[in-house]
Length: 425
Ligand SMILES: [Zn+2]
Image (cartoon, rainbow, N blue to C red; front, side):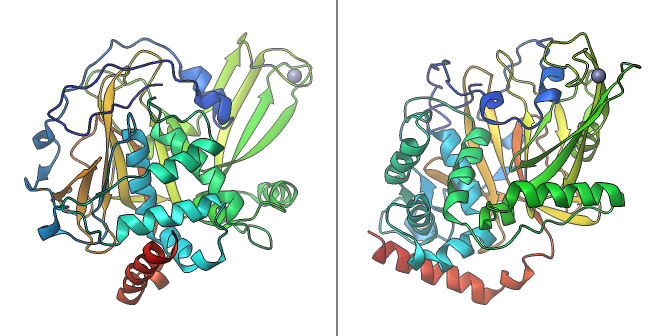
């Protein structure tokens, strides 16, 4: 589960990796574990992807934009504290979720100094507001230290995974963004009435004390249907779960076959048989002869999709086509950012590519270096040119945040972030 390097320069040879990561996604994230077990087959050869040649991916402006003369809002880099490119890419993408950034800056006066969200607020304010440094990057040490206190598995000198980092950051922020009432997610149309009732019941039981702004923006829900195929039993169990990061296994592809993201999401909901497999036992008769199926019940406003490219030993560089616009059930989504992994499973480097809210241009955030990306897509309807290295994708549901996507709100974010930088010391 190693995918990060301490290098902040793509010309520097990647440093050797410590691969004793203490965190396993299965430990922290029960969601999708049935599917994960099914998919953990180390049948691929180790494939080292070429590192650093961005010309193959997209055209970059050669001059970093975050030197002072060319600076623009939202284009400040992050210094690498050690082996923290996974962390930096995660933060750049979270900051880029402007509806949530807007919420955080709007409410900064209500945060306590000891709150995690207080530290988060200061961090994103520093990343948006102009700084006085000649080379504009920011050192996130204070925030990282706060994060480390709450999640001690994350250390400056150890690599980790961006998807796990985001999962933890959101779960910590969730506690500081509580609100009254019950969550009210958009239930998708394809559910029948019985399923809708079950889901409402589940929400009521599980989330009546857990409603928060983080939940509101980032949480979707899924239902696992677990059917026993033993004829004397036939028990059916339903398991409802919330998710903030949707973990999609990479499907075994043949040769140069290319998988579309839309198809990968369909595959995620396929029925699967599990016979004589450890950990796949019926809760009633205890036999291992079950069928599982996962159904997405509610897609979040901000949909974060993780392709499980990193295995214990291998980096699965299967081709997956990532669309600029994604249609799911009745909702349309727009890609607003992603993280690429460059290198193999045991060593590598993470880079964030985000669509900047302030000027609608795409930027590459490579730790402290930020460069403008010229024409990421051929057109609005097309797919990302690089299909092998991206693993974490951020989609924003269209039409639900339109009320804050105005010049006035952009100005608000700029003004408030400058205030926060002054006031929150
Ligand atoms: Zn059974």
